[in-house]
Image: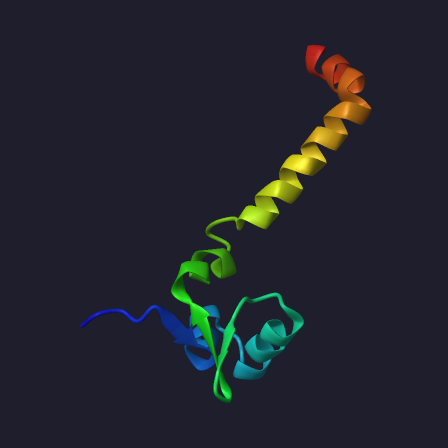
Length: 85
C-alpha cells in the first residue's frame, strides 16, 4: 500500500501522543504547517520529521546560524580566552 503524502490532524495527534484539539491549536497558531482541505487540515509528511523534532526546518537553521554569528561577533574574544584555559 502506498503511503499518502499527507496526514490528518487525528493521525498526527496519535503519532505525537496529543489530543486532536492540541494539534489543531498548534496548526491554528502556525506552529505546525498545514493546508486546508475543505473543512479539514492536511499536514505534509515531509514536515513530519520537523514536527517530531528529528530534523530542523530551514528557518530554524537560519535562526541558529544568525544567533551563533551574533554571539561570536559580540563575545569572540571572551570565547577564545575561555577555550584556551
